[in-house]
Image: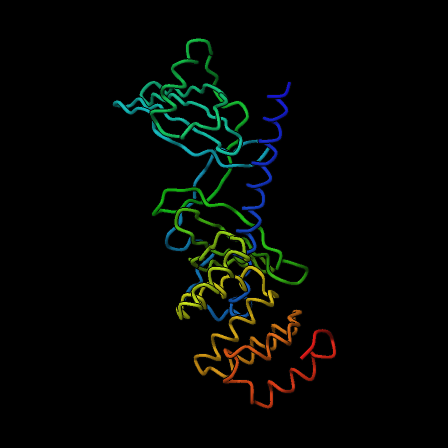
Length: 317
């Protein structure tokens, strides 16, 4: 009973992690689309739009098997190919299920085995599925359709031969075009399908996504401060900018960026980050008064104005 409970907890954790990753990717795509939204809506990306009767370069129409409950696309992997006979495995990684398809084209034979559950430690390789299926095939009867899978129309990336993941975007609303992103995970790129009123459809893309896996911002700041102590300001700047991409209101990141830009005589940038640091809650005015890194902006009128504005909200100077 204890093992079953631990297994259920583990599966719940994995499903929550996968959902969080998917939503994080959706937000990355929506951020990218937002940057081009004005041009897309006003039709100014004519060089990247395509006629509705044809697909953009890089993708093609396809039909894929998907899990009937989760909607996850089953990935195909060839197990054997001999003449007109082919054996393939179709697996859903999140569900930890796979099916085996036996096809003999000359005899019009198309048989399915499964679904079979495989352990978390299965690597999804052809060798793994061959061995796993060999242990189960003798006790199973094939069927004409895969139980638990449904066929759906989809799109596929030509370069990676990978089914595209569909994301409906939140920009779609009454009176605005319906926007759907189709994302290729191996290529970290997406195409945008815009369906306007009166049936007009346009494609845009591909656009690259520069995805950053979330990391502890506290650790990033610690690394940045260490880099600053060795005068590695470019490295520290990159780390702190990464913090701000994850947490735009992180006052420590803004404060340290203000120090870096001040040291490098970038007065406007230094004051910009210094103001943000105060706006987002940095109140250690005693430290500000003693911090030599800010000397290049300390005597500016803007610096003094910011101190007067925020020192009454807390801290001391």
